[in-house]
Image (cartoon, rainbow, N blue to C red; front, side, top):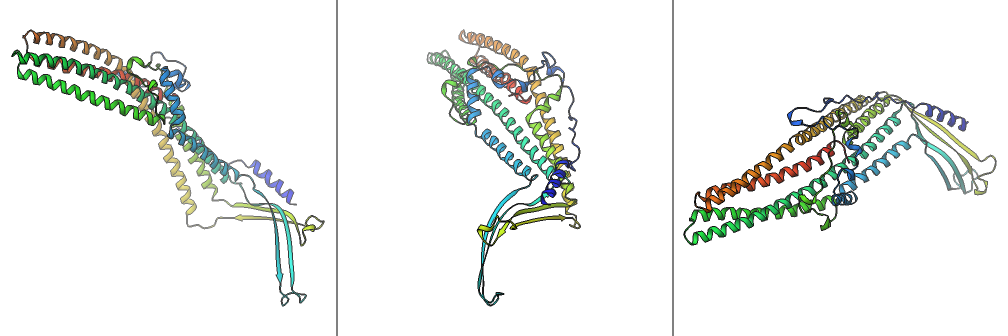
Length: 467
């Protein structure tokens, strides 16, 4: 009888795989299907390839061998990425716990009880000692998931597990991009430090020359004071960039999770191999493959599944308890004929009145689904904005660098002419001072733009889901 009941129940459960969760359909992306166009997006439609950024490995994208080694160290040692990986293991275990409720939990038990009955209540009028040995195998309170409550909760746990995996992928992409950006920023700050030192040497030479001219009465005290101001300004910049390089190294060490060997650090831009260029693709649908957007979609699916569990709570819950075994007053009689015992019980909980708690729980589940939907759509909009910003910078940074290089050349020529006119006594030192400051600022601006071009490539690769 028990065996037949169990077989019938298992058959019902196996074929009752439906849930009461709403049908899920991926929402339409709330962004234009094509990338922005216009003067700021020059070249966006050119050079489109079939290879998505997400299909380009970070070793293929970052061609610099030393940077590759630094990124590899970060992927091994970074603590944030390690936490993300451990979160995956945690949610995977939670999913397995939830999924296990779909199946009966079978337990074996054995017991011995001894009881002394005093003579004044014994039927024989004498005190006796009763012994009982029990061995059983059974299922305790196994819920039959007729209405998909447990299946809905299991589906929700699965989506949360998948969301955690996407979170780890997103953390890895961000880590790779951050390491590359700090690495290239360190190269830019080293370049600026070299420029500040060379400028300091040139201004020191100029100051010494004016000091001599002042000593013989050719230069004025104002010229000497003005030369000293730009000299001390160069000293300030040398100290500033010396500190900044140290801060860059500290930031890189934190990202990597261990001290970065000195031979892997870049000296300047000339020692850094630029990353390869990537294409955003023709359609903005490529954003749907970004890990952070997939994570948001997984959480949306999880919230959708929770509605099924909340709906199922309105229907009866059926639990099954069954056990079979043997019982005897002697240990040797446990497995003798006629010692078998069995138990089969079903319990049905039918909700009647709960003051609206189940309705409120359903409303909460529906609100959570709507919140997750809004967050999913916002994630797509943010991703579209990030790519559009990166494309706008890529479309204009080349022209900026070309113009800045021309500006550096013009100010270098102006400085040379102003200095020559001052030496010949034609102009005051004020013209030299202005040209000198402007040339230095233009050179610093060129370094900034060269860094912007490198970091723009890394950023575009990141926001397109690469790595």
